[in-house]
Image 1 (cartoon, helix red, strand yellow):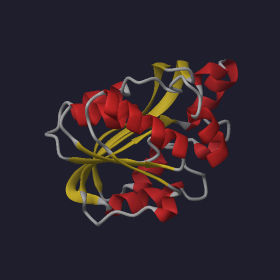
Image 2: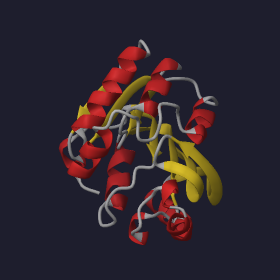
Image 3: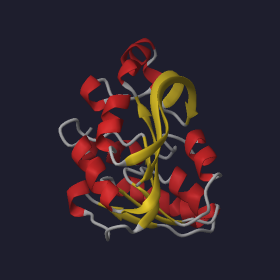
Image 4: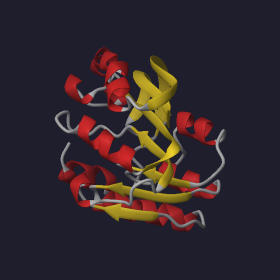
Length: 204
């Protein structure tokens, strides 16, 4: 998906994926003491704002300026602040071991760079820090073919397998890793049954 695609999607009045947080993310954050958290590919800010409201110091980025503007408005409406940057992945950098948590929620990067991006993001995580991940899995294609409203990439190479996550985060203690069927009800573009990979790992 191109920058123009996301600027158009996030430039609409309605929130593409709603304003409520992803349920898996919210559940995982409730188990942790708030600290510093990074949201790559954060879109319109629903997860970043939720984290800020629950006491986290939030950094986020996305290639879409429209997403950034919407996220900052949502933060203001909720009385919180987030450090949100707009730009391509390669142009945005953070100090090494800066964050306690990295939350990758439907962060579907291009197939040829997604593993490289995961390894780069891992450098920003403190030792003992946590990665929380949910995105569409390799088994999702039949779901989106049957019901386009559930959303997700149509390119299988942009979807994830548990093996990919194990390889990308090989130096992590795996706390949870599975592909599972879930019902999504997130805004306009995530509605219906889908297959997702969920991963929670602790950096050794």
